[in-house]
Length: 465
Image (cartoon, rainbow, N blue to C red; front, top):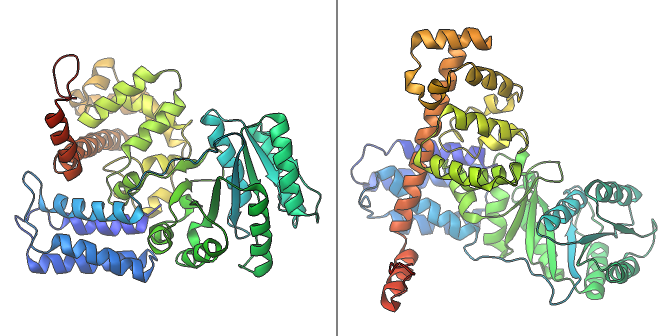
């Protein structure tokens, strides 16, 4: 996701690395490139204008922040503006005061609403909830069958009405059944249309008044670009939408819809659908998304995904996180990471999380990613001695030839893997350093530190917490 925008911005930032101060011409060039990049990403024009005004105000007259290079100064300003436009407020899941919590799913036909309903149920299970699904899209018998199949796949009961029946009555009966079975969440899948129409909105409004949802999620297809803004405004005018879920993010390289909807309509983005599998639903985090757009990768998402892949071995994951942020990686750690990748989803998605690689790999190369190459990487690493894995600097020319023979690969493959490890080291170390510097210059962090000092907020060792 956001590949086109991210690549363009990353290339632009690189041109300022050797400058000691941002001149007026530099600022104009930055603003021009950012504007073009956003428009090419299909971001809403009004949103682009507002974003440009914010960035320009910060850039004009900016000196290089102490200890930061000019490109990092620009990145910080653009990052903060992206976070603001994506939403800085923390949006907690609105569970009802007493079970069951009711979630209303709405959206146009073809947006992935039914699949997303099952994905959300699976996410709720991971949060310790016991969901139930209600098939209220009675216009399409295939939608009922699809939800029943997905429900069986994730082990969640489905209450289905009769094809052509009354969706409002079905939703009401589903709520009663949910209470009887003592499920604590009911997710209502409603009918969609190819376009917004009065019949769709009237039916949706009647269901909402009947079940009184705690959350109403609008499912949007990320590939529709600026049209998502019009759809969101139409639904928001009839139903109290509490959040948007964008689907098909794995197939959208522009990402303009995500940047546009929240800024143009005020509807917060809550989840992102990253694939067709039921486990590919990510909780939306504006900071992570902003940093991925800027080519900073998403170490936190990478670690989260690793934690899910190695559940029950949290100490190992915590150690890997600390070492990764220090840039202290070796081939043993890389082998462990690649071993987990088969449990983490598509390899292309994982690559996008790695700092230093996210926007350096050509798009055509990403499209040709062959997950069987993991077996080749494994063979190369396993052909190294324990000392070579711990200290790759030991691997000279003769050792590389030996490793290539032992793994059935070419010396060029060994060289490429060593280069990849070094790039990952540098990228993660820079990411860790960047995060420390950004926290240092974050006025909100300084404010809370000052408050702690004033209050004498100290721990048992006498140190400030």
